[in-house]
Image 1 (cartoon, rainbow, N blue to C red):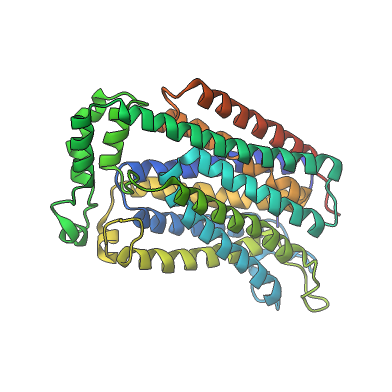
Image 2 (image 1 turned 30 degrees about the vertical axis):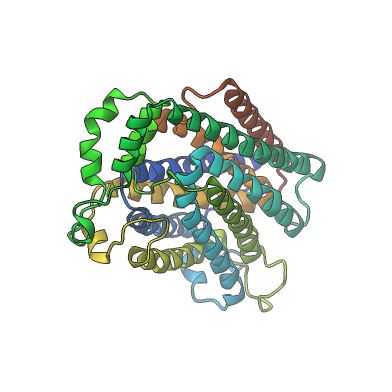
Length: 412
């Protein structure tokens, strides 16, 4: 079994995890904006997310000889370690709930703001729990100022969202009343194909995407026309919906995210002494496997249910429609792999340097905001106030991640 032991190796794992975990949300957001139903995307994502955990377990978890203290992955599957397994599975459940919620929050309040709010809540709650679970191996005088920086960042994120929402409303009002009314009526019309198209495996918004292709090329990101055309082709319609719903989803998802790392910490280090005497602790790869299995099972159950009982006025779909929907499936598979390897690297680094320090990967909004601006035109043609708040938010995140990583300790 390969074990990350050095502080430098742990930081390298965190940096790779930061890159992966900041990129996969942008891919799912891109698919939603192209009209693919989030239930279809998340089912695909869940398959490769589990596959990543299996690959990690069968490679890193099987490197070298197995020892009684640190058994290899396959050896540990037959051991009596169910209390730790249950902690790992609880972690997978809350992560799955958080990921499911955020795919709707991305549409309602934007990729950047969603990631900032959920990540900051994760750090404020999760890092504090991990600090005490890890027997305070991280330097508190450095760690908690870093947590404070994340808390300031979430306040700035709320201000950015409020300012940007006001900017977007002003852009929409700049359109002529006749044009705006016509565009909004088009965006809310049901698709002619209805549920029959879905049953045949076609995403309901594909025709809208084709119809708006020419006009979308003429519109510039950040304009009122761009916002209306985006509304016409995306899967989740956001016009007329209260953004407070999106913010509420963000906060609930953040609470879910804040619990998965402490649960994983308990699974691998057994701080509550739930294992029988002589039973070795779960190695990070075995815990990650069980963690991912529970995440996968819950995701499949919830998303198949949401196919038939959708939320936020999404069209009803079927499992047959999902199987036949290949539009963007490759991107969804890639997102699952990135998230799976990102989570695995985060846990590998946390086992070496402390899970509180590994929460530095929650600076993933730095990466997500980059993709949001590059791919989706977020904050284009916004007000000066919005830009000032955005720069302040990102600067605070840079400071926070640097401080949190510098608090890294070394697990004995």
